[in-house]
Length: 71
Image (cartoon, rainbow, N blue to C red; front, side, top):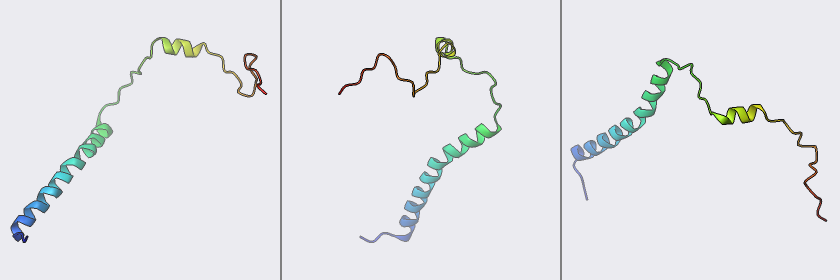
């Protein structure tokens, strides 16, 4: 099947145009994030922040009394 040069050009332009549109969305999003105002408000996780602030850090090398050796 032999296609006309003009039809081949239109197919190539369609594929390249579709790829350009597909790749432009992340580029536009990146540019918007660079020039947009940053929000200084932090996200609060509610009760999880209070729970984590009262946690104690346990040394991983310290053996727990609840673990028994099987053997």
